[in-house]
Image 1 (spheres, one colour):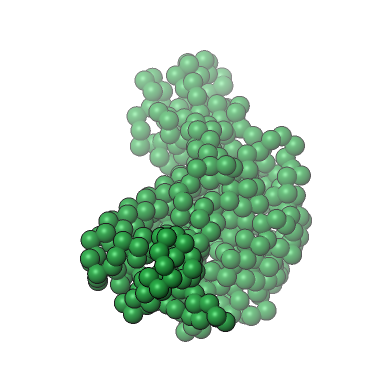
Image 2 (tube, helix red, strand yellow):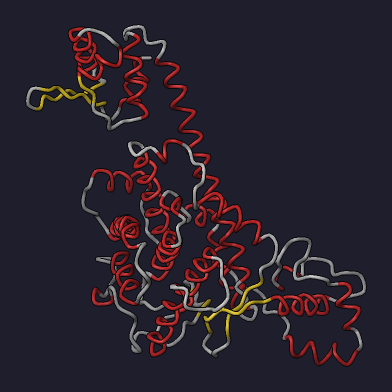
Length: 443
């Protein structure tokens, strides 16, 4: 990944443009902060033809004037005590509205997520996907199939990569319990401890900030430095400021909770307070913030798979901010795009699963070896996999005699579709875990 071109110095441009009398023409030709709906960094702007009569430098000068007029400052500061800021440019308000409607409040979601008996299937899928891809973004090297098998079977990790994935999985589960807490330094350290346990070269670095004798930079294997974080001595002050921001103490004006969560993600990554595991901790902090602010559907949404499809874009979003006067708009736009894609992928996954289930129920109607009562029960079990049936409940549901109900259920056990267990004097029947596979074979 290349470091983006640094934009022309705005003060130098002003010294040239101010006395030239060109300012009115520039402002007339550049009426807003974007270019045909795109919030372009200088690195990309130079690839576009400027408005007629303007140079690229004049065009950039006009865009920056508009952006500065509309910018809003946040408490995060760089190493020179200069504040970061952002512009609430289109389409940010529209995208925030979509996320409000699609991930929080009393939204309409498919039955599989609202149904207590099936929601865990989607919850665990999301946790596993996020755990695997968030770890892979940080260098974990293992296949999805092996990692999924490890988590579902409950076996111990075989190497550091698998340990990273298991840690992320446990962290995502833990965030659900922590979402009601206010952010504190101790909570941040707990998140870091959860994601890094048994994965660092120095075990003492788990769950604590880096020391002054542990300087770090973000670079590539060729020695290109992309980010040089603030010194360790500043971390206590910066972390307190981050907690105040997360807990809504700053800034004074309203800040949309999704933007606040995105800036928290950037803030921790920028400060890089730990020797290792900063990326995983930053993404965990983002999830905590979204759930803390009531976006409950984020228990089922995975952002890391979207990020991993274009990791260079993730890195460039950080670099565009740092190379353009701490303008967070680039990272906010990128992150909102990731969230919208992740939301869309969840809804598409649920649509496919619902359609597949309907097709399976359709084939079930053609299984002649089962009577209509058995087919009805199996159809119910497909949507309620943890439901327990009794001979009496089956008898009442279908208005048959006890012996008929008993025969129906025991026949399903014999065919390998149900498990039967006698507790006291009552038989309880539950669907086998691979019911869909067995039905597929039968049909």
